[in-house]
Image 1 (cartoon, rainbow, N blue to C red):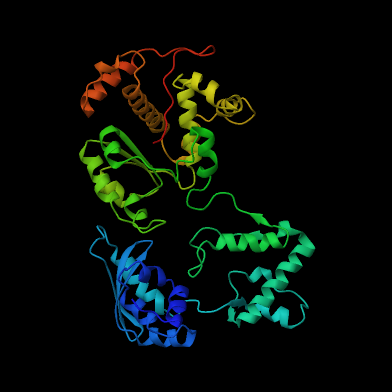
Image 2: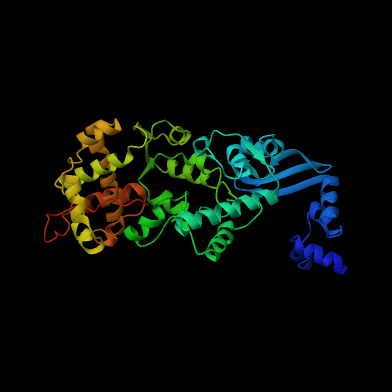
Length: 419
């Protein structure tokens, strides 16, 4: 492949050089850019004149766009997508040209008027979320931003600046904008930052303390393992059928076949949710209706019930946890708060107390059988038959054998652990 110096530089700046050097076939739009002078005006003209098919990968699957004279006229899912979502695919086309799309920097109207009046009076912060927006030039926007940051540091210190950008989703044209923003604020002396992210929430912080690994972004258990070794799945406020249509990377949508295989293997499903989801319907889940935002009360009551029945692993708690004495006092109401009984939670969650007890019992029993099947306390390994039904019978026998007692409690059943 013969390249001029100008083409070499142009292709390197547009990310096309690697494909050319390695012998990969360039896409039609990449070929159009490669044949164009590297200056911005020439490449923009080439894009506006382009017609053809363009492959693209998004957070909800691989797409193919049909372009006519620089304008997208059709978008469809690629054939490799096992569960394409037409609404999302077609939405890309609407989003690209919709009048609501933000195409430049915008400033809140009252704030801009306040700045132009020499900061006299108020910028009316009470109108945030309700005020009109005014599009301004990039020079104006950068100037206002710089002034606001420096004023905040002067009045509130660096703690007054919040670096909220993180991950690869914050900006469509920059990869890992959190790194750039973090470096920017560090040059100014630092800022307040986030811990964790909105996808995993507190799980990123608490999971290493509970099981020794963050788990959320670790290698996940194979579908075959889940199919062959899962007796009970509990959905808590989630709908995988909907949620897994998008992913952090490009989704392969393999999960739909995985869930169906687990269902066909005889797994039981429970869904704790204010509403019935499509996942519940497909999996035949036992629906437990709960008042929104009350799941913590439910879990506290389930823990209190298992604790009152001695169905907790005190030896494990003593060896691997810290602070259980305070948690126990809180559950039992010995710290001045009400005991977290199922009756207490029933008034909050809308779930009858008897149902809360049965949920705790079912989950604890499934965890017990699962743990016994992996490492039975009394049955020899050779006595554990293969196969789901046989393994359940054997593990049930193992669970009926008393476990070792801790110095402070009677024989107990292992506590449930989510998988």
